[in-house]
Image 1 (cartoon, rainbow, N blue to C red):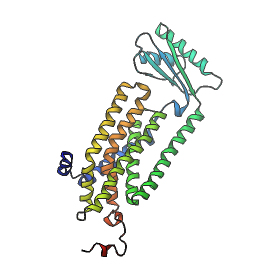
Image 2: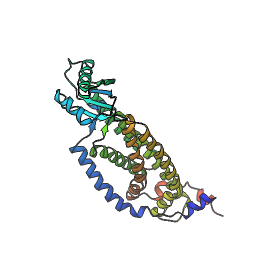
Image 3: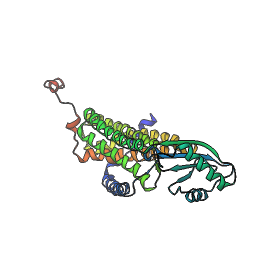
Length: 315
């Protein structure tokens, strides 16, 4: 009962801010797209190919010293970073000559690091991905995102109406560009786990959008009076508590994964955190606003009245 009263009292005018939101999102989209085109991504080993070597030190290691020691031996392109703690170091090497085996390469790197540290360095794992495999993964990942958007467009158009479908797809493209754009700007490593997170963001954003669209359609049938904007605002307010609870609990889990899950899934967690926040915003200010801008009306959602039904409704 208290929840129903709270829902009735809540009357935030979200739709009136749609123009401001559109201008802000448009400006940021331009920045993110420019960054993607100019700077590109800091692709991980999954996409670029090469060798990744994880080593463990007995004492905290200094990345600058490790990088310099590798550069002195000809590994100028080595990317060195901590992997969970200052004693765990991850080294990424670009593809080398095919006649150099990964085992020989790891032995060479381990020898260099042992001499630089003056103590035994533990070799924990070595992984190798060919450049051709990395390129194929990059292409297949892009196709996966494209096909998911096409499928969503068809699904929403069949379930609701083409204006809603267009709004949902624009919102999802907005979320994807925001997510990968931030990865481009801050040069966060982009690997297969991040791509999986981007696909998960698409599903999460669509789910939130469908909930609001379904309530809008329901209110069009219930509320015989009221403009499209009033009905849209009413629907958003009615589902707001559900949106806050769902997004809030999801963010708690993702924050726990980011801070406690270690470096292996940090990119995955960051992508989902960005996606959940941006997806919640875009559902209200992009998807719904786009459907209104395209001219959604009551007649588009109400079922057609058959002959005789109006006569049956007369007293």
